[in-house]
Image (tube, rainbow, N blue to C red; front, side, top):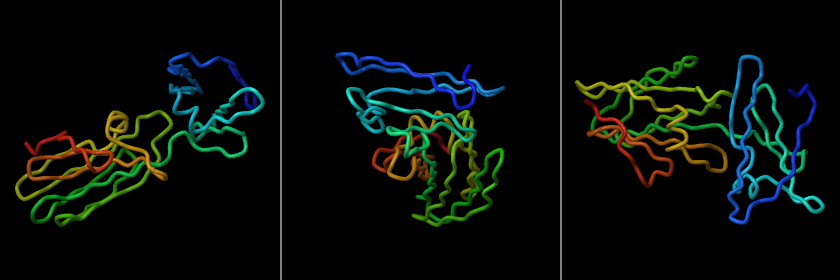
Length: 188
């Protein structure tokens, strides 16, 4: 147990194969969260050399976990997420997206048009958005963001984790890069 302002640190050597991995599980009141605190990607992106060692610093705050290589510039461990819904439907596509906290309202998209929104996933990885789609006589409710979709289909760019969806006549496709698409839901 660490009181506010206290520090826990450890030293280690990276293994020969550079597959060293550390994760931590944090508990705060009734909340808990596990995540990777060290791997090669974190090392390359955030850790800084000081004297004869590399340093990676994590700071737990009420709004999330922050990482730094120098304890001066801190970056939240995960940037905002942006979900993009793109219509590839002939005619109009109607949709309404929402989470437990946010109703994004009704939207009408023509072929090629996009509806998008940004948000910061909650501390516990339980953020969920779904959209209800209407096309002619068809309608379908689709989970457009949850932790599973994030890990599989959202890719980080300089400012966001982007999750792309295309509504097509045969169903709903997801992609993180808009190059490779996977059919995740059919209209029926």
